[in-house]
Amino acid sequence: MISNINFERAVISTILYDSRSFHEIQDIIKPADFIDPVTKDIFTLVETKLALGETLNDSMAMHEFPEHSEHIARDISGLPPLDTKTLISLSKQIVDLSKRRQIIAVLTVAMDDTKDGRVFDLSSLNEIDRASNSLITNEEHIAIYEDNIQNAKVCASTGIDDLDEIFTTAPGDLLVIAARPSMGKTSMVTSLIWKFLEQGEGSLFLSLEMAADKIMGRMIASRAAEPISNLNRNSVMNFDAVQKVKNELRNTDLFELSDLSMDESDVEHFVKQRVRKNPNIKHIFLDHLTFVKNNGKYQNEHLRIGAITKAFKRLAKELGIRFWILSQLSRSIESRPNKRPQLSDLRESGSIEEDADAVLTLYDEAYYTSKESGEKKPPITDVEIGVVKNRDGPTGTAHAKFNGPLVRFEPKGTPIFTAEYQMDEPPVDQPTYASPPVHDEVSINHETGEVFGSSLPGLDDMNIEMPAI
Image (cartoon, rainbow, N blue to C red; front, side):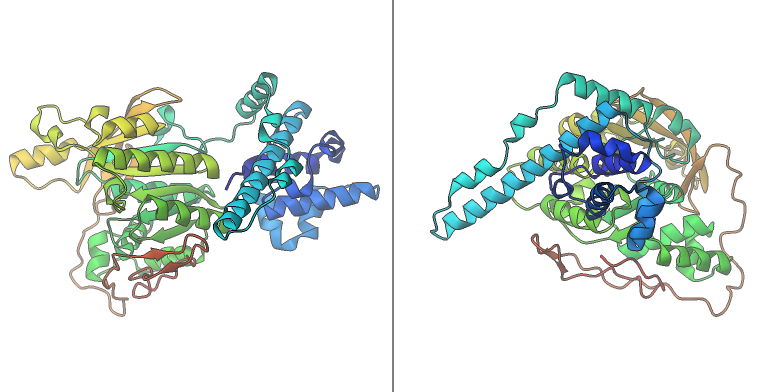
């Protein structure tokens, strides 16, 4: 869908802050130009109130629309007001996007009529101004750029100070986390998800490799500081903490999880459906790239990976989200003395390197030293997070700790976890964690977004109720 909900929210926030600014755009934009039902309803109400000589602010809007009050407070009222030039420019862009949607709708009807043997009157296109007539001037582009810089929302922290100093993200970014096996890619994702959740940003985790119940176990372990081995053996040390995390997951709309098998088209339709239904989702995580189902459209793997990364980059820009992809690094790393990952180690690196806004790599020296010595790897190790590509910032290396028992990444200075990983006598009356079979195939209706042939496995057995998907 061609839209930019962030533009709509910024415009509405400004006219709620100062209703006089409405007069600057009342001849430019109409309620029908808004695609978000909340912003459309508020704009209509502002228009009505001002026509009656009344005013409207965000508190009054929340009172008028109690069903949207949380959405208004979270996503609209806290935004900084736009200056007049930027307000006009964004309003024109919203109108431009609206016209494009109308053109697409008319052409879709024309195509359907043609297929059915009916003659479609293309003169109806004359009712819609061509999108090219709304070309934004350089002056307007500069005004938008300056406003974005001055009023930029602080990027959500990753929870690792070293990484935050050199790595930032923005809506529309395609981000890659790459590593060899056993370096903690999935744990990096669950750590990020929890950190983003703390900051009010939701995530949708598409686990194409690991079953959903196993992901849920990792989410619980890392948050409750309960070793994953204890959870898997049903010998939980801190039952209250585990139950608290379960309740947190039951009641939040900031985390959704799916282990459906999908090709890139399925992913695109599924993500659009979820983001439209839950605008709190700001991050998409896909684990991992090579598990995106092959639909047979492409002659070789290079073309297939290229098509996937380009599709996901377009999707990130269209929805204004951050799209994170996990990727495997080439086995050639294992044959060289210095095994620190490089950008060229990405499988099918050309297309990934071209499309990604940033690439993070994970390197655990202890993994290789223990492998060479034959000794057991320590439960907690120092890891390097390499920022090997960063379109809008520097490259460099961040340092963190990987806590294996708790399956999470932590800042370098976090106190070491010293509790025993197994209890002599497990507590009684604890829930049992089961792992039922995972459905490998799924059918998605691309028109309705309905999913057939699978459900989230294992969540009922773990007493977890995820938001409906």
